[in-house]
Length: 453
Image (tube, rainbow, N blue to C red; front, top):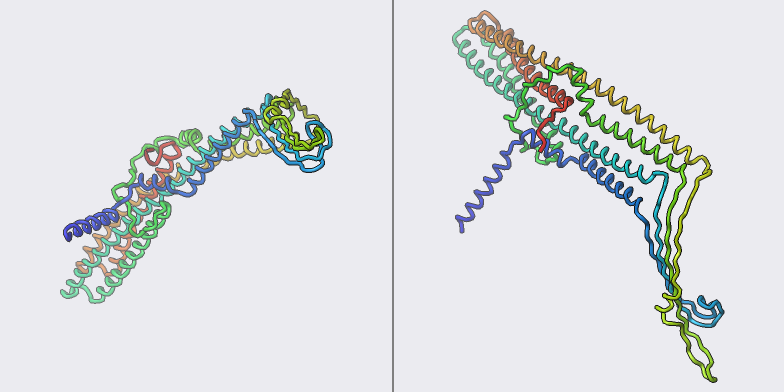
């Protein structure tokens, strides 16, 4: 029994370790965020509402059928509903009605309502896609920020180890009499500054994990981690394309422009629906009704009171049944300018939506051109940062050699070392900024951040 318990405990420990050791890839992060994001769920509910609205539009083509019935008791002196005479009696009256009505022509309003409903579904689908794209970009940015903070922490940690080695080396030089003892104090200050930078880097990493965990709706952000091997590639041919080509491609693919154009079509249908109120409407109707009554009254037969009743109820339903059917034509003549004003109102809205389409096109041109120039600048900044890092590294090594032979003081050496650390951090910053700029530009060009499932 104890062995079974031990195996069970070991299994739980192993499972817990695996759960904590899980490192999320970019694809997993984006898919999880899209699946669990509240805003996306709200947009999906809007899509369901649009689908229900389409069912309403389809229902407008179908006939409406209604059935009704009633049963009443009349006690005392009442009119016999069947004979029309006043009698002192208890009367029960039952009636049943069935009515049907179908639109034959409504100025094409029903057809335009259905077309509008289809467009509304398309617009809602685009809106869901737009939300997914925005979430994907936000997740990618947060993911890259964690990668940057991880590498920055590594740089600061390695530099702290180098500072420790330099302290030990300086201690040897001091004991040998090659450098003054005061240099140890300067190196100790440098080591303290390095530890401070490590604390700042650790805090930045923790906050960046919190930011991504919140996007993914994950509560345990302290144990949340991402895969360091899943670094998006900087190799891209997107800058081989001209800015004009990227803009043209973006105008074909961008979801926000598709939404605006679909809303323009919806606004056009609203005008057609409003104009339909000018036209006559024609509908057909059919009605069926029947009734029956049952009364108990006293008659005198051969000098004795006798209770008399009505005919059998089903015989009455058959005798009293009736039908009516026909056509109903309604011709609008004047309704206080309501139809005219509604048409004008929808025309104004159409012009507003049309302007929004133009604005979206201008925004895409501006955003894509800005993204294009930013990507080129980010690439040049990264390449320059690499050159600066290489030069700073050589300068630091030169300063170290000069310091160890007593030709440079500790202050100048520390300055050279700090410049090299800053150059390393700048390489990391420009590297991940360049990666993110590439992904944005590729995104505008129609290249997804991740492969679709």
